[in-house]
Image (cartoon, rainbow, N blue to C red; front, side, top):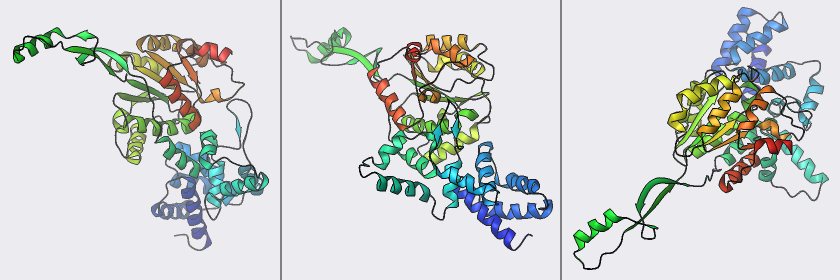
Length: 397
């Protein structure tokens, strides 16, 4: 087995990856040393892929591993990379951001005290601006999920767990006894008169039963939606355990119902079960095919009694919108309200140019961004007051 400085450096590299969010235990380190002894370290490329094969278990971890590898193992451009990771990110055109989203997590993991870089930035800002008055929570509410560090993501999850969706109650066709009801319940009145024996009969009244309508969530888990969908699933876990009749289905290249997994009270156990149930996480997107499956298989079961549907997706479809318009129209006609949450809408210059976006827009009641905690608060406010705005008109404005 490899010994000396190589074994020690592999161990420290594993610690960096673990601090950055990749689950690596001591057994992986031992396996990595054995793999290096078998494959050899004569070529840098072989060394890279040997460690990747042992340390990585999911596709979305590749970006973290690549950045950490080139920094830790003395990339010639290491200094420039580290400096760029510590600088604030600038958003350019829609869908583009520099540096990569995992950069801040890697830079924090390489520091002696993870989270130190973010704290140093806050201290510098406070020193340069005496009028700095925003609390950490207030700043975090406006931060984009894609640019958050590992520590900020953990804190954001705790804040999200306290959010709720106050959807107004709707009246059903069922009635209940109510002394202030507007309708007289004749059968109940007659039954009461037979028991009482009084000469004056007291009228029994009734009113309609009001309850929250079902909430159905269709969440895109493709590669472009990875960070946002993970945070939104924490939000869905909170509201699933707060109220009844919440149904969650995720889609990429296939449709998966994860409602049962989200009902577990422990968020960690729930997320582990969700991860195990999903086979197409961070892959491609076939929105039209998945919506067709939902309309044929799940629509009649879930969309009764004035259901509200939340569709979380960036609208980027591998099938270029083929058949998507017809499925969106059918979904819209089957529910009470259809709300589309799109993280790309956070860009002021957003234009509905992709074919999938153009096919979906005419069939939704509201079109809103979902990229930070503040956008989730706005969503709750929108659902509470019911001030729906046609999506096409909103984008045109």
